[in-house]
Image (cartoon, rainbow, N blue to C red; front, top):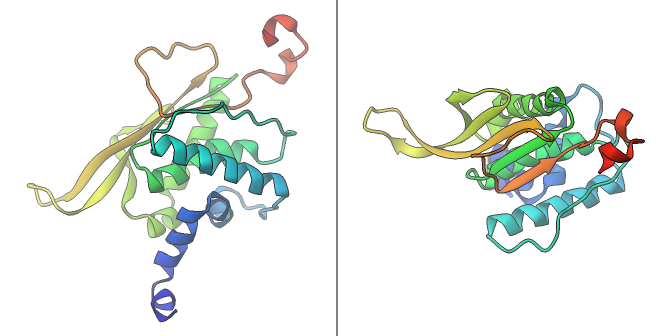
Length: 200
């Protein structure tokens, strides 16, 4: 108990690592000035995403594709597109993501929020070893690095190249890009949802 009291950052990090829900609740103020409002579906989705990520990390075969259907405004994009990749990188810095939406602007906005979360003072306080590669840092395509203990030959902190996030729109070319996890958020413009052709 005394060790925990003397090192609250380590305790926060451990709680975040154990629970995507705790991570989301903890970092919500970095994302929004509005208070975090929980609901049973957020707890459920966090558990589903945790299982998915753990299976990917263990290189287990995929049993199914996770499809999430919830009403607009129920934190799906915040959870899946902003918090989830950042949480994964704190545990498995090497994970690669491809994220897409019906609109490239929407995909880039979500990626920007996720990038801003990682750059934030609070995230860096809890995870000083996780950062974004300085020369691979755009909204559409950024790379994660892990700062390793010790110094490099140039007397700078050692940096290990890690995972990445490539963001695009549905239907765009993805040749040459690979991912451990692909997230497609809002694949169809709501205005096109009544069209059989667009649905197909």
